[in-house]
Image (cartoon, rainbow, N blue to C red):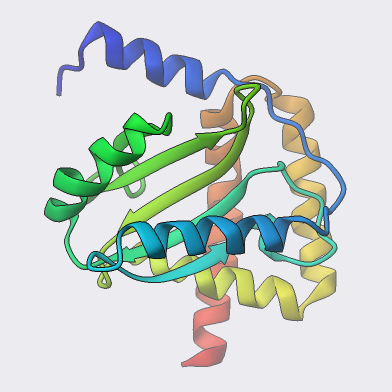
Length: 189
């Protein structure tokens, strides 16, 4: 698939932004709630449910200070038609991206503060998306502090190894996340 020079430049800028892991911030759950409330009010006919996931959703865990949100939408077609232009007009970055380096695709937004610093990653998917498995991972880390510390150490090591390459940082965590997610699913099922 050929991409435009403009899109390529936007992708490279987003990938190259500095990675910084900081101590847990008690404001992260409130930041999630505020954004979730805003999205539900703004798009009540399209948005079905919203979950806080990722490291900022695990109390006490060091993390990149970016609140990850998993948003169930009734239709990605409606999302592209209604939500994308509206959020883009409010300054959100928007990317149509694959789940894990291959289709199916989903809508992904980066919200930034007034200084241009990322505050939220908003992943909009339909109910059947495999991205919902991320909730198993979150819940497992919330219940297993020892495993949460191991994951935290992995992230800190990768922050040093790939300080300005979000793609490599994320890719290097994937095997660990997939294995732990599968373990968590087996325990629940």
